[in-house]
Image 1: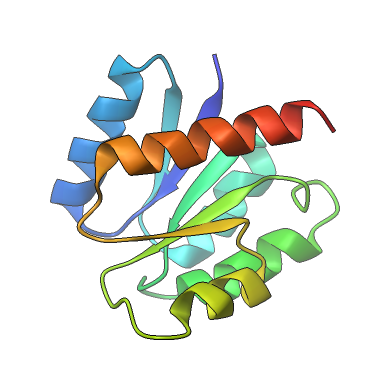
Image 2 (image 1 turned 30 degrees about the vertical axis):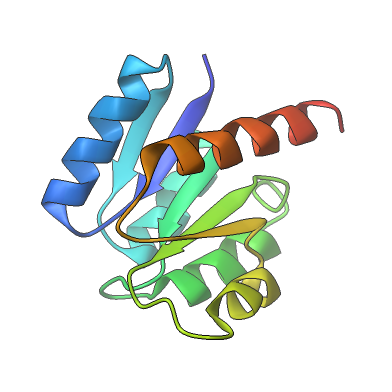
Length: 125
């Protein structure tokens, strides 16, 4: 069962997404800010991270950079998510270390496809 770290500060988004992922057979662990996201990524070593980019304490951009700089976590695929879909945000996310990027509101089927594609791609490496 793949383990997904969901880093999301909005309780409603976090609960909805974690329930839907668990129904699909994923183990879901959560963090509510970027700093705890980095800590949980390092301690739990999830198979994939879904990272909100607008987070308190440490934003998702910097949390992603830090996760990708830690030897134990740098291989973990990260999907960045943001409600503030501005031109260049996807590129900014990739530059920060995200392996893919999605916009909010979350379209679950699209996000699930990205999760499955990244899990398959990283399983082959």
